[in-house]
Image (cartoon, rainbow, N blue to C red; front, top):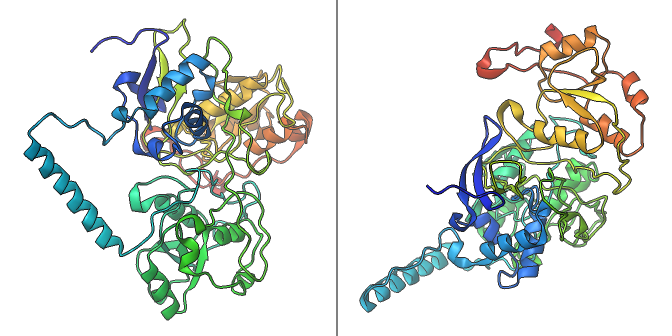
Length: 473
């Protein structure tokens, strides 16, 4: 295999356990995944495709915004060339009869698919894949109750393009299932006496609506479910809203969910525009400033509402290689993992104070799934390190007398927490740091606040740690 020259664009994948990228390929050898293909609104237009790809930052791609203009366009031209698309292999030259046979086979498949869908309309809704940021209990206004949907059982039909993840007739389904389960709900594939709701997406199966009505099962859309999880709607109020009809979910009539607040009246809520997500910051490795930065893409609603999507089932890194390194630029399509749910602030933008952590030393412990990136015991740590360093702080690996704060994530290490407590070093979390970044609190304020609530400690690598309830510690 030929070596990849410095400053070339390369493609690799993410090792979830190690939290690092590998399996590098030259850009020209990279097959563009279907998830990226589906996110292109007009693959014949370079500028439109660049915008689409930048909107995929922190959803399917990471680091494209850090490339310079020339490398951005090189990447774009590769992506929009259908010869590079996965599942679009060139047909070998052959006889006319072979070509006819293949055409007949394709036609037969299309006819079968047509019969299977029984007249279901193809989606024409202009929805940005992965543009909806799924609620997390207690984060960004979501109800702080992991049992909020306890006793509620859902059946889903249709696709949820705004959620992203999955293929073909299952787009968004697995991610929504995980979201519902994180609030204590249950998702099944069949109706039963325990079914509470039919959650319908774009182009649902009409028979599901008929069966739900026959069994007096309430039909909801993702907009209404989001309203419940964000405290904008109660279960009692939900039952008084106007019933939804299957035609409201077909094609462009479908109302995608957004992260903007929705006012629920007696009739169905007014359609909200699909908001474009401002991508989170990525580590800058470009030789010169990016000509088109994802942060410059105006959201359709407001900057406050724009959050990175947490929906896609895979994420990719695109970054310009540092000339001092032995590796080259990257466009990565990693394996599925935890996705970003937190909007990474940028110094000097939207009220974020530059160098607010100047002179401060931090130690990280635990996982940060709301940031995404990495995997295993490194989940979210690289992005947390980048966040702190972008605002002037320094991250070290061990707790010492020079440590100013220990940042606690999910399932932290008992050893680091013990050392910090013994040395009277403040324990803080991501939300506390975010408040300091935006001038809502000072470092002194968060240092004097109660430590974050810890429910479990990490089991470490290979289960050799102390995994135990914090109450036992």
